[in-house]
Each structure stands twice: as structure tokens, then as C-alpha cells.
Image (cartoon, rainbow, N blue to C red; front, side):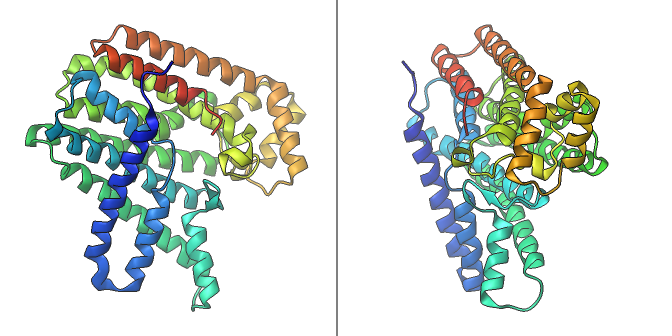
Length: 356
């Protein structure tokens, strides 16, 4: 039996985001219909999703301060939703950098703007237009994320603590993205390098920092933050390793991405690094050459087979289990509220045992 139903929380986060975008739309109305189109795509970018970052922020707060006063509830909801704006920004930019066509079963932002340009018969290159629009929307969402947290309604000290952690999170994820781009450009990455990319591009900003931001807003001590790191960082790593498995072996009907999308994009993930190390030479060379190239369904199946046969898939599953167990064991020893501990344990399972 679960101790927390996430569905009402997700609805609340969506409502906060919708109201925020209504306000931004009113601000930008003097710019005319072009600004309206930008807001419309922003609404698409922040719609749906698992809301893990918001949830970990919420329960990071309640781990330190279990009872949320009525006067604080709205401020906490705003702070949690701000991390979903940060996430949407990262996805818009990431999809463009990876040349992804889809996101959650819909056209990626740059593809949507590209299609709009082409359908309208405008001048210039529709691909370039789509790229420019996606960069600008991602930047706008990133700026709005900081604005939402700054104006959330917490006191000056709490806001300063949350913003300091938010700024660190923002720096880490952008630097992690650059690490990822650099690794793909070099066309090689050992397991340690792939793990560093995973940690800074995703693990920290997906779980560890959202927990820290929530705890910081609640007045967590340095010792409590360190305890939450021992939970959040390995769990974030397990979360991203699951994502890497889904990027190769996930069902497109559930993930909203084409089959083997990470292989087509040439992602040098931990999964791929392990396969290249363990596969027979000819198979490893075949996998290495094929990464980042257009692939037919039969070729995707072939590369999946190479990865599976190398033992890399099973090894990553084992590492996910080990990291998740380590995270939960650390949480048991942490100085946090008991109910929050139970919910964070449930969230850990949801983050690492998912199919989307």
C-alpha cells in the first residue's frame, strides 16, 4: 500500500504552471501573435511528464519540515513547479542538440517550429528557424524557472538558500550537457567518462538537487543535506541508467520515442561503453560504427542484440539495483521525518523501476 498518491500533486503542479504561463502570456500580449505562438509552445513543453523533480523537491522540504503551513503551501507549490520549468528548458535544448524528432509522442520543439515555417511558406531556411526558436524558448523557460522560484513567496533567507542551490543545479546541468556533446563529438567514452556525464547532465539535477532545494527552503542543516546527498545522488544515477536502458530497449508506444533512439543519436552512455568493452571485437566495431547513423528497424534489433549478448544490459540492471538499494539504505539512517522517508522510498522505486 502506498503512503502518497502522486496524481493530485501532479495536477497541482500543472495548475501552477498553467497560471504562471497565463500571466506571462498577458505580459507578452503587446508583442502580438508571434509571442502567442511562443507561449503556446511553452505550454506544450511543460505539459505532462512524471514530475519527479517537483516531487523530490516537495518531499525534500517535508523531510525537514513535515507540516506545511497553509501560508507556505502556495510558496512550496511554486518552488516545486519551478523545477519543471528548468526540466522543460533542458529538454527543449537537449532535443535540438540531439536532433531528436519527438518528445512524449509529439514533435520536438525545434521540429514543431520548423514545420510551422514550412507550412506557412515563409522565407529562409525552416530548419534554421526551428533551431533559433527552440534555443530562444529554452532560454526563456530557464529564465522563468529562476523567476518562479525567486518570487515563490518564501522569506528572504529561505529564498536565498533555495536560489543558491538552484543556481548550482543550473550550472551543473549545462556543464554536463557540454560534457555529453564533447563525448559524442570525440566518438568515444570509457565507463568512467560516461558515468561522469550521467552524473552531471542528469543524476544531480533530476533528484539530488531538487531534494536539496526543497530541504534548503525548509532550513536543512549541512549535515542533513549531506545525508540527503547519500540518498539522492546514487538514486539519480540509477534513475538515469534506467533512462539509458529505455533509450535502447524501451517500447516506443510507452516512451514516446522511436525504437533505439539513443543508438540513432549516437549516445555514448554507460550501457554502450560497457557493451563496447565486453562484446567480441567484430561486434564491438559494428556497434561503434553504427552509433549516430540512420538505422533501419532490423539494424536497431541487431545492435540491441550485440548489447544484450555482451552482458551490458544485465550489468546495468544490476548496477541500478545496487545504487537504489544503497540510496534507500542511506535514507533509513538519515535525520528526516518518518512519513517523508516512507514517501521518498516509494519515489525511489517509481524512479528506478519504470517503463517510461
